[in-house]
Amino acid sequence: MSVTSLASQLQGLAPADGSYADLFSSVLPAVIDAIGEIASSLSTAHRVALAGTANTFGDDQLNVDVAAELVLRNTLAAKCPSVVTASSEEDPVEKPVHSEAAAVATRPEHCYTVAFDPLDGSSIIAPNWTVGTILGIWEGPTAVGQPAEKQIAAVLGVYGPRTTAVVAIRLPGSSKADAASSICLEIGLGQGQQASQNSEVLRSSVRLAAPPFKTRYFAPANLRAAAQDGRYMALVSNYIQQGYTLRYSGGLVPDVVHALVKGHGVYVSPVTAQSKAKLRQLFELFPIALIVECAGGLAIDPADGSRILDRVLQGTDERAGLVCGTAEDVEAVKKALLA
Ligand SMILES: *[C@@H]1O[C@H](CO)[C@@H](O)[C@H](O)[C@H]1NC(C)=O
Image (cartoon, rainbow, N blue to C red):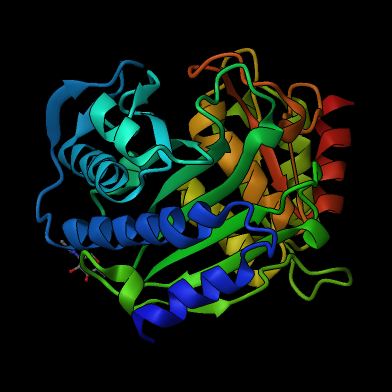
């Protein structure tokens, strides 16, 4: 497909009243371009090595993490005048995207804040497994102190044998992220700097299926925790006894996207006394939760069963566990883990 098709398909989805106009016309196409560029840089990165640096969270950075971070930062600065603030897992302090002069010159009517994990899945990238980018778009000049409702869109970039993206947008005026008030698309990408020019919408309505399910899938993250938590062990045994199919790679993006593509799945990453909460609210949990809910699923915090999108973001380093996927399976996990 040509540039007009993805751009015009996106524009065709924009609300008629002009709200979120920049989101559809410039921010989303630019993010798709960045995902294509990251895919190209991964496919030519013959070595995956420690960059010799650590991010603010103390995690070692890989050369490919640094490259993906740079692609996204440069894209936002060059192509997204309405994105005024950005932060990432590699550099988690919110900073202005544009110089003061550029900001005054363009004066966006609506402004956005972007928060992203440029390359999720460092532990499985060396064996060349599928990894991803996770990105959330917030209305306004900051995400900190804001309710999750201000996150109006999220994008997952999926780098495997093919490059794809899942894009979810909650339409204005709806606080719920259910299927009726949101858009969830799957996009197939071309490679290179202008990926949006040879990308196409593969599915215009990504939805988890309703029962009865032909095949039921489970993804038990942090499975070592089952050795210390009898409830998690019982949950996993129950899946095995009920004939669920195991689909788990250890990459948050491919594991969640698996459920979205197959129409069923439950991803469980519990928190126990010995294994602490690891996933970042801003860079991982909020965007994943928005995507899953826009596809008709549910995303909760296993510590107390609360809905992740009911939160107010207190700071960029907040962390939690995650249970997400098909709503009825998520409810069952909540009962099993909190009993
Ligand atoms: C990694 O896998 C992709 C296909 O998924 C392939 O094109 C590429 O050559 C592989 N890279 C390495 C270094 O094996």
